[in-house]
Image (cartoon, rainbow, N blue to C red; front, side):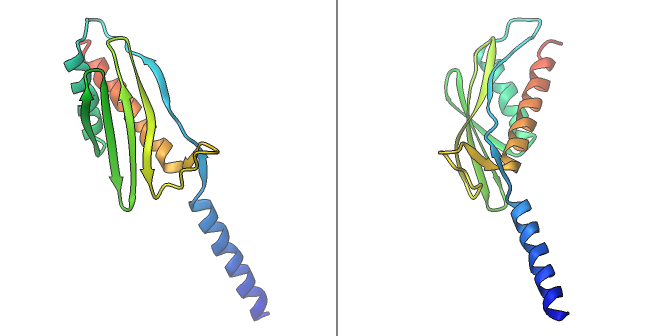
Length: 133
């Protein structure tokens, strides 16, 4: 009876570990349209992206006009994205990561990455909408 309980405990622990490390397809934001009522310039776009990212713990830097890079570090995990942008649209594209089980052949990554990118996308949209006011 004791052996059966040990096997069940090991099986449950194994399932918890496997569930916690679940990988999913990498989520990229492609050419998300910018819909603001007034014309925005490169500096306003970058400022909105940077402010949105900073509020979520992302470090946003300007690589060149029309291209920002974001990096987030959480515990032992790190992700880097490129954010190309114009007055009409922006994208968020995976660039690099550490300790997120990224698999380039399958284009998969730890499921938390997608949540971080979706939150960043939502925050950018919110900050761009504030430019309309």
